[in-house]
Every structure is written in structure tokens, then in C-alpha cells.
Length: 532
Image 1 (cartoon, rainbow, N blue to C red):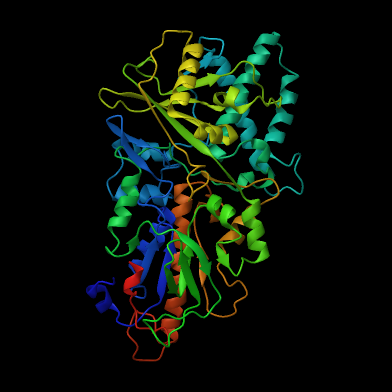
Image 2: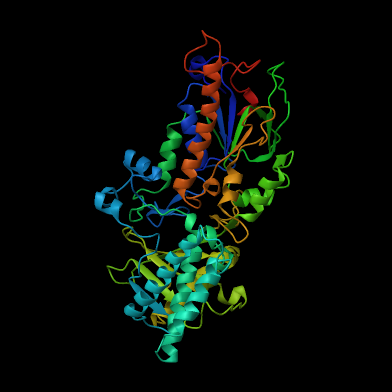
């Protein structure tokens, strides 16, 4: 129910606005709108029992682990997530230092502390560094085709493989070393799959790849958990704004909907929820993940989306990147170890090996990052992308624990390595309101598709303006797949609504309340009781 103090701010004025999805895009949009006097009648409909979306921190192993977003990518002054986190006092001293903000990583993952081979024992750090230099120089080259008239290959993966074949012609080592080089490169391909949220780099379009923008700054984490950020944004909202456990079934738009509690008033949009509740609104900001949109495309909008927008949703890539946390009583790694790479000697990016998932899913696991010590617990965090990652979600905890115990015993050459005492993992593909991790520009799509997805409806300017707006990481052309892209997209759509109502306020007759939008025809403001 609308609180009396908020009703008093703008009695009978301002539009009803619904934000669908309580991730950082939706929260960012809501926070921005709540700061403006034209929007006292705002609700965020969140399908689950918690806010944050793909930002999800959990208390486990005696500390906090990130089940979702892990790092601030490019923590520097141009990154709004970094700026907000700094403002809220959520970052450590090193992350806030000017030195950290100036580091240019090129978006590349750093070298591992140690690299283990599937044959048992470590791989030469010099060989790993040599292959990383080659791989990331080629990745840098892929960004040069953004404005090219034509590309040497349709996908990033095919281009990389073509270049690697040419480099191989100059390799003079014995066959075993050449095979090991290819195995290291295969691991780096898999790392890049995690970064891009894809099953294979063959699915990632080459020409638009360079449009993704890497900000300066060495990636950093939140000592108290990433969710501290979304919790702080949520806490800044009036207490009645968030509505949890309210999954949306269908957004009816371009209509003329009435409400019993407001006779004579009509609304262009009606949001129908899974529990049967129906809520009319003037504007709806859709911030649900692209994976959810792909799955519900035929039923989530009525009338259906324009053909071009529906096609953009189908074409843009959306894959899975999961984490597997392993808890140990004692570390088997060195005290200064931060990143353990796992190299499978029988793999190569140049071969399309397709063993059964149940026999080899763990070979897609790129390795483990060492988490800060949680007192009595020592925790490794493994990353795995693609179809293997989705298959992993179907296994039991016991199966995952057994498989990874065998992997670690094999690669360390220690058959008596103590098994982890517990496992925790993400399951983003199985999550019904997410259906994956984040977006990438797939072969057959381009940055234009992300811009098309971001365009509000109706697109032709007919009828009521800005009925359905779109935000979320997949709507940001240069920062897709990131939390800062998601936050910026939420701000963008809030600003779009604010600009509309500010312009209408300026056109309103003299004597209208300064700084607030004109009354919506027939509007009494507020939300009816059934909303809650």
C-alpha cells in the first residue's frame, strides 16, 4: 500500500511505473526514479525472494562467497559500480588506490600461480607464459576488425585457430612439447569462454568483438560480498517499492486497461503475474535476463514484440558460466598461490573432440582461484562454461565432489590428496528466471541488435509514449555481460522516463506545481491494495 508520506509528496500526480526484475539494472532504475518528484508511484516486481539478480553473495564456509558476479571489471572512475561501491564504503584500500585504478589489463586474465597437467605434476611457467602472450596478442588482434569491410573469419574462435595454425609452422620443439602448447592454448580458449559466457568461441562474432569496452583498473572484489552493493541500493528505496515473489507472466501493452479502484482512468499497459494478479501501469521497465526473454518470447508480451526486436532477442548470444566452490581443511597449494590452472594434455583447440559429457565435462573446468582464507576453511573457486557447465548442474553434489577429487589427485600426482569436505556451486542455467549467465554478440548478430533490444515500445511513436522500456546488461552495446553495463542501462531507462515527464512538465500550463509532471488524465495516484 502507498505510504501516506509519499502520497503527500505528489497527491494525484505522476504516472504509475512498474520495474520488472530486481537485479542491479532494475534497482538502479528504481533508485533514479525515486529521486524524482514525478515518480511517487513506483513498484519493483521481483520474481524471487531476494533482490540482486545475478549478484548473489552467500554466507558459507565461515565467510562470504560470490555465487554470481565476482569482480568489478575495470574498477576506475569511469565505472559506476566502482564509484557506488566506493561511496558506500564497500571496497578495500588496495582497490581504492589510484595505482590499482590505473592498471591496464586489456581485459585479459592474469597468469596462473601454478599450472598442473593431467599427466600429474606442474607445467613449465615459461611455456604457460609464452602461450598466454601468443593467445592474448591474438585476442587483441580480433578487436581490429570492428570497422573492417570484411573479416577473415565469421567467429573469434575460427580466427584464433587460423592464426594459431600459422604460428605452429614456426614451432621447432619436439612433438610432445607442441602438443602441450596446444593443450595450454585449449585451456586459454576455455578461459575465454568463461569470460564471454559462451560454450565455444566459434559462436562469438568476430567483427563486433572489439566493440566491448575494457575499462582501466585491476579487477577487484567486495570484501563483504557483492550483494552489499545491491542491498545498499535497495535500502535507499522507500520501503513499499520492492515486491518479492511476484513473477510476471505476461506484459500486455498498447492497450486501454481500466481498474475498478480508478473508474474513468485508463492505462496503456497491464502486467499480469503468475499468481493471477493484474496491475495496470503507464510505463513498465523490463530488466529480466536475456535467457529468460529467449525462453518466454512467445508468451511474455501481448501483442507479440515487433519482428525486428524478437529477432534481436533470438540472435544475441546468452550462455552459462558457473562456479564450483571446494572447501578443504588444509590447503594443498602454496601460501602465495592465487590461481591454479589445469591443463588437459589430450586436448587441442584445433580438434573438435566431442566425448560424452558425463565422461569429460570436468575437462572444461579452467582451474581454480584461491579465495581469501575463512579461518578454519580453505576454499577454491573453479569456473566452467558452456554445455559442460549446464551438464554439471544436473549432477548431484556427491558426483561433482567425487569427479573433482579425482581430477585434483590426478593433476597434483598425489593419489592420497584429501577430498574436499564440502562443495557449493552455482546453477545459473537451471534458474528459471535467469536461464544462463550473461550475453555475448553471437555470429549472425551485431551491436545493432543490442541497441534494438534497448529501444522502448511502441517503436513507431503511436499511442502513449514509452509504454515498455528495456534495461539489463544485454541492452548495453559496449558493456554487455557486466554489472556496470546493467547499472548504466537501468539509469538510461530511468533518464528516458524522466526526460519525458520533465518535457511534459515544461509544456504544462503556468501555475502547475514546479518540478513535478502534470497529472495523468483521471489519475488519483497510488497503487490499489491488491498490489501487495
